[in-house]
Amino acid sequence: MYTLKKDVIFANTKIIMSTPKKEYSRITTNSLSEMKQNGEKIAMLTAYDYTLANIIDRAGIDIILVGDSASNVMAGHETTLPITLDHMIYHAASVVRGTKRALVVVDLPFGTYQADSKEALRSAIKIMKESGAHAVKLEGGKLAKDSIDRILQAGIPVMGHLGLTPQSIYKFGTYTVRAKEENEALELLEDAKLLEQMGCFGIVLEKIPSILAGEVAKKISTPIIGIGAGNKVDGQVLVLHDMLGMTKEFSPRFLRRYLDLDNEISTAIKSYSSDVKSGDFPNKKEQY
Ligand code: KIV
Image (cartoon, rainbow, N blue to C red; front, side, top):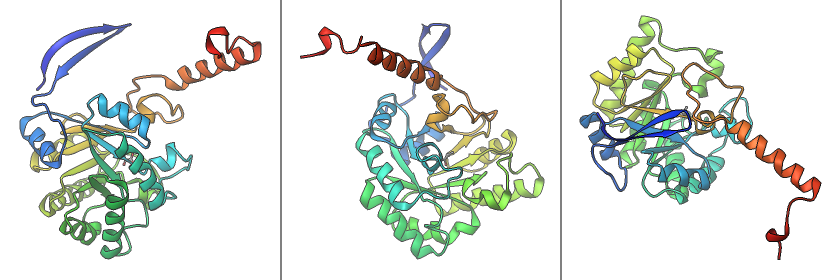
């Protein structure tokens, strides 16, 4: 799938740098479907601010999701439900300013698209106009059909989200693996087909069995991005703060931590505090 370029050894970690099959100066929804056709995996991460979006973009991530997980990791809420449309637009506009290459997708927050399709369209238009983002994402299959249809007809690209849908947490009561039973799995497959037929440019599948996710990715042409959905899909997404090791209390099996930033940041802050208190900072070179 990837052409091996070089092996680089960093500390104890062997990092394999790879070259994508085709270089893209700007990722579009068409690039994503081309990547699926070429068997090139799609890398997606969340971001909520300018600085981190800029780092992620320069590192070559294909899709930046301004997720409603901002409600958890940025605002400290227990669920994604409290975040508002204006909060999402504030985060999204900051991310867009930091991004040159990635496709920026913004979650429609809870309560801004469920009541009726006209409200859904108004919310999507507000996001596109006020943030400059490139697409929206919303949770649900056939229940969200009218809203998705109306948004797509207005020319706004839509990404679907099936499986574990955190905005419905109070309906289900838990964050456990979804679609383990046959009827739920068949329903998910039908929902994915519906999203494909309507013209969604991608679908996030969250926390479902790997075999089911692989089957969906094989049966439909829409790029499938997994989180806790195994490696038989077309790409992966993680919440940035989780993969950087900033959210210690959250440890699902699917999460791979690439850094222990909680520890790193805490060590740096303690050193700074100690330097201030001892009078060591600032020294002669650090003043005018
Ligand atoms: O809000 C979010 O971060 C998401 C991802 C978990 C896919 O929807």
